[in-house]
Image 1 (cartoon, rainbow, N blue to C red):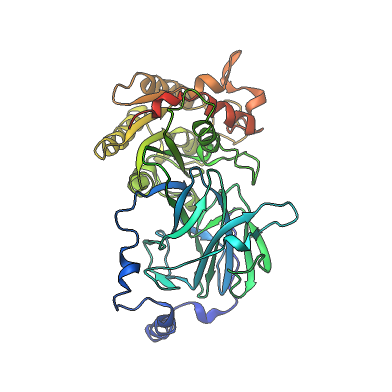
Image 2 (cartoon, helix red, strand yellow):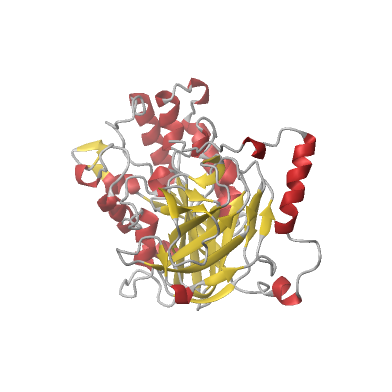
Length: 439
């Protein structure tokens, strides 16, 4: 699944100290100087009630190399607001990320305008008042805010021009959304970019925050693996279970959602992710224990986290011949205990989700009788765990009553592990919205 484009320009590979110095000098015009920016640029985010409204957790740098190209990506926010800022990421990168320019606009969702923006809604993004920035390896960067009248469930187009070779790009591998990569040049302000390729990865993009219209908020982060990430959902339709949860929460006719509360839902799933191990393969991202602070606790306004993670810790060691990474139920419990303690230490409520059935999965060696015993034992522990602030019985909602170790056939995407669109809706519908009525 790793999609790399070999860069024919060998001179971009830094091999000698003098060559490294040469390219540092080349990048200086695009790097923010150390001079203090204007006071307005420094303070325009101060004391504003930011909340996360969309997210995509970065995995490792396994995407195609980008060089002097524009990337246009689309995201559907959960909660609208009056101001917007964008978080870009180089947190797992190995090369400096140069953002030459960036813009945000409303997407033109007409079928004959794929990849297009509504020009009248286009805004330039700046960084401490500057048009460009160099993001070092290991770091994120948040844009300055822009004024936008953004409604709930609006689809944003975020365009970035990357003038310097990136090496393998930092990506979120399972976007379930089409992104557009241009030919050579900066097309960030164009209604449609000159496309050389399309991809289902997300590049260097990890979050969108808003200043909401009201002050009574709940910000929910959904933390998990491919089932949270939306594997098996229809591309470009926003049918993951966190998307459907956001729709339920912000439906004014839903009596179980607390009246007068605005609900933001931020998806922090990574396909293939595990609680306790990172590798292999690299595209599955940092372990849950390693990324929890980055992907959950750093989300502005976070009040609740839903954890649905652990099935890959059970299934991957047998399916990938990783016997040295086999885990016990006690180790899974200890890992969840760490996440619960870290969240509670920051005043964040923790809701646990039971692991879905998966017997008959088409991934060879993933299901075993021993693994099923572990899943059942771990689910019992989740249901009885008094440290949790709530439990969602995804297992009970998704299993076949006649064969409870299997997914219901009409909710199965076909691999007997991941739900389809209907299954993701059932998952969202199984959540008691009263869990989020208080912070």
